[in-house]
Length: 175
Ligand SMILES: Nc1nc2c(ncn2[C@@H]2O[C@H](COP(=O)(O)OP(=O)(O)OP(=O)(O)O)[C@@H](O)[C@H]2O)c(=O)[nH]1
Ligand SMILES: [Mg+2]
Image (cartoon, rainbow, N blue to C red; front, side, top):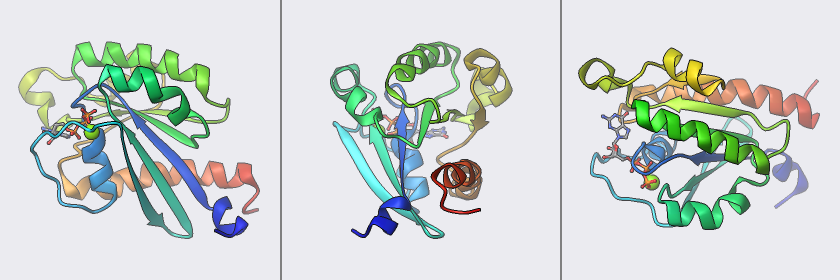
């Protein structure tokens, strides 16, 4: 790989408890069919998605505690963006707060941590929190998402694009 290509490679890491929707987000970004069947990730799932001149390397880490405790440090290192994915249930949002505190130890000061309040389709039916409430608890920028809905891909890409612009400026690739 050429060094100019490496400059344009970005590492995006998804972390969160089991079944919150990390792999679904990965499939959404990769334009793959979204299967509603839950198949827990074992270890790590990696996908690369092209976006303009950039290659987004997406790291989807299994949520099961045994994996997370063993591997999270190495996976988090070198991330350009970290998504903390929550299923927006009150209990999971509180867990996500601990996860953010933990992740902060392993990432650079400039790496943004962004929360995804996933499963927003269930807010009206089972008491999940909207993105604003999740943000008030987590104190990091939070976006709502329904990852099973393919039409939400554009929103998710726009969230990434906003961060990408900052990363590009930091790396001195433009301006
Ligand atoms: N209703 C609803 N279900 C969702 C949404 N996103 C994901 N799911 C479902 O939640 C379940 C778990 O999704 P996954 O993406 O496999 O979860 P994960 O976070 O990768 O889980 P682990 O691999 O165990 O860490 C699946 O049945 C998905 O179809 C959503 O926005 N709304
Ligand atoms: Mg998974």
